[in-house]
Amino acid sequence: MKLSVIYHSVSGNTARMAQVIAEGMKSVPGIEARAFSIDAVDADFAGESRCIVVGCPTYVADTSAGLHLWMEKEMGRLGLPGKLGGAFATAQYIHGGGELVIQAILNHMLTMGMLTYSGGGSRGKPVIHLGPVAIAGAGDTEALMAFDDLFRLYGQRMAEKAAELFD
Image (cartoon, rainbow, N blue to C red):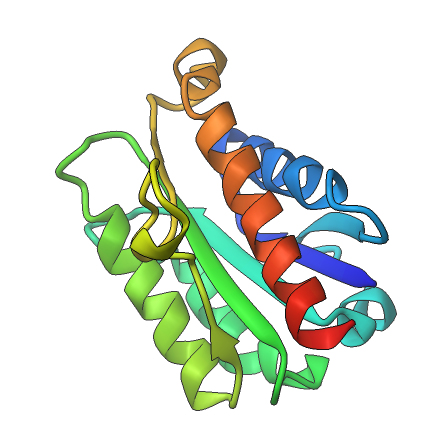
């Protein structure tokens, strides 16, 4: 089963975390996962994907302009109704609004007919209510590494839910 992680990244932080989510997805047997920048989405692969996770950096407690424009103009071309969706964010500050970015992405997914999932508290600790947020300064790989396990687990949980729903 194909799964896609689609992201907008400026400093490289979001791109890195998208790759970590894809790693977590691939840990589930039978899953083929790939991560794509919004500028280089493989439309065929994403169109065949049963689950799409979208993420971006947080700008003024909102999505990046690049991702917002992509969601309005391009996202709907991927045949989204009935697919599983999830969201993640990166931010430089814990109070930067990462959860608001995730909510904005999930709102777009819902209005396009997607089923959204995060696992919430149903999967136990660590609890990922809406989606994971990584906090690090621009290009601070060392700080990002503290979030690898959380993002990898999120990818695994999304893949397991996709397999449960669509296999």
